[in-house]
Image (tube, rainbow, N blue to C red):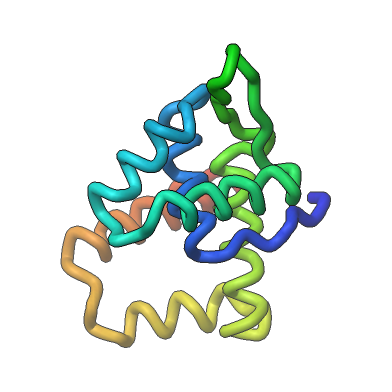
Length: 127
């Protein structure tokens, strides 16, 4: 996989909105962000511009209005970020990560059953 530009945590907030609603205007992005964050419009516009410079989003112009759309998929970014996290925190060991989460006692029985089911499916696909 070709490495994507690093997307900062604040930029992820903008990306989630654009993935959910491609061709969304900056006014709509600002309104949606301000429903959950105490960010100024100028801050949000700066984040949009950073994402444009990183070439992970682009825009269409309609008169004076711009609508933004993603150039990279959400799944691609999540996969890249997951790999980076596992490499950074667990030295690339998925096993260490899973052991840590299982031993943390923060997983519910439903979480454990879902994990068990996923592991069984992965094993079945391997055979």
